Image (cartoon, rainbow, N blue to C red):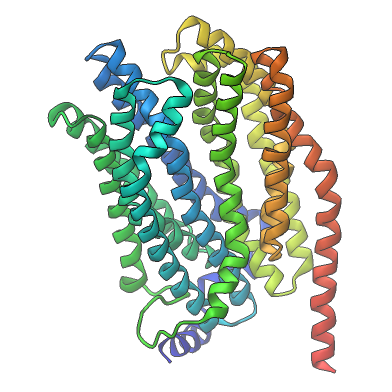
Length: 480
């Protein structure tokens, strides 16, 4: 009843924040809704990099062996951290798509019900990850450390760091979910403030816990967890201190399997799509070991993943801003606005990634030098960056396709694109090309960006037409 009364009041006053997604020009919407997300994601990428930098600075004073062990430990923990983030993204994307569609259909009460179930799922998944973190972190690090032939110190540091960040992953999972819920209503400012707040706190606490308290990798993990919980409490408070388009108030809550199913149908493919990166990362490490390529290619892979986050974050931020626009206009059966949004998503993504292409092709040595890479790593990394960057234009189309299919509630198809791109192309092509040298492994990346474009883009065009034709037919039948 509370949600219903709020909906009536909001509609009478004409103050629904989500209304703008059906009326404001697409370009203006994309800019205003994506810019906060882009800024917040760039800040997130920056503080993840700074986390590694502070750990490196601390342990470099203890000798080369300690430095190598600590930085390698963080690299080994990365795949599991990616899975934690993927859970939040999966739940958030599922909720985002359902909420924006329901708001477009005028069903605000249904949108609030989805939001409440999304937070419940985030808490439940965090509890599962806490059990995994407390019981399996050591085994996970030992498994990867054995692959790389790492020392006991790597296992010790990696286990400590990973146990803390996974056992206390509630902050990041709930924060990401709440951010996506607000973004689905067109509110991009609060998620930006929330993530920026966490980044600033993490950067401030890292040197204190490392250099003042001397807590080492445990200090870096604790700083990360504190920053995540701060962001979570802030964004949760915004649902209660300020009126939002959806309510997460527990009053009158009744569990709905249908709401959970709606979230999971779209969210699970999104979760897997993001988690695939961890599988690809580990697979490439194994391929490099199988061909006895040494540590340098693995170091280059780690460096690429850091720069990948910076290069692609503007595009991912654009997609965060675009997804609720797509969902809303699909729900409202506004075909012209929907297709216009797709076109501008591609154009803006191309612009961002062409800048990345230019940087990777012209100054890769300077970029690698930011991490004080040695001469051999810098040389090998420059070759890798130039090869990988060739595929950036194709990635603009691929990322747009994945998000477009999600907005149409075709989560399985978006999952298929990601599976095909990474596990179907990057991993097997890297395994085949690797026999000709380390530099040949990187050619798998541009191949993986362009092949899905030619296979799936025509399918997207047909799907958009069919989905809108079906909605328009149902509306005509309802009127008749």
